[in-house]
Length: 275
Image 1 (cartoon, rainbow, N blue to C red):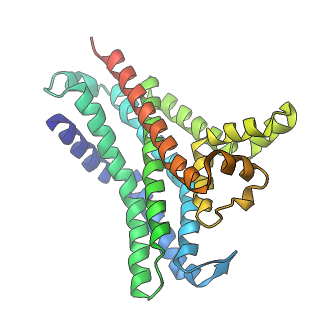
Image 2 (tube, rainbow, N blue to C red):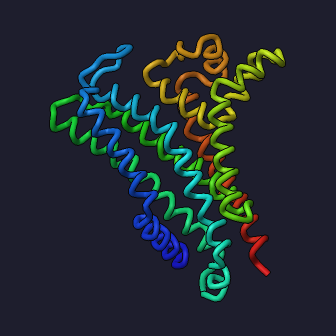
């Protein structure tokens, strides 16, 4: 446990000094600041108003920005240190491989989740000062959704970094994974349905295997419990889960995917680097 906490602390401190973290923090803090600057909380679009409107816009932008940041920066973690020869020093120190790997994962999780959460918390604080009603139910679920999203893509990133032999390969694989998730939101999935003439239930099952699609749909489900915006596919989802059940699924499935990916990365890392 001591090596885990020391590894987590070291990785967090190293990330805080990195330029990517400064840009990452500036992006999310800047998004919220711009929302307030341009009066987004005072607008009404499709019935969303006040802080609810800000949060639903913020979560949609985070869906596009966070995954690629997490994947690209995380894959440099294991692959980059292997490339520069840090493992030789690691194996000479009284630090277990499991403590180092899971400590690095924990430290990186805190670093990537903190700016996103603090930006939302800052929005709530400012709204409170301005007398704007805070939708605590939406804020709580969105916080859980962002926490799970960070864990999901961090786990995938750790798996990729354990598989890749060098940093360039790791970054290339991470970008392709993110691009695949992004395209399967609508474009490729629609083409598969048209060309393959597959059953609607199968198409929905493929869509729900994509964590980005799960996050996107769950974010809308608070404002649209019947998922009318999804059209006929909403009937398949609601029949299988119900509205409340789907929101629970949207938290459990990506979390499980991230944990399994991180565990797979650890097993590959341990097998490949122990004599």
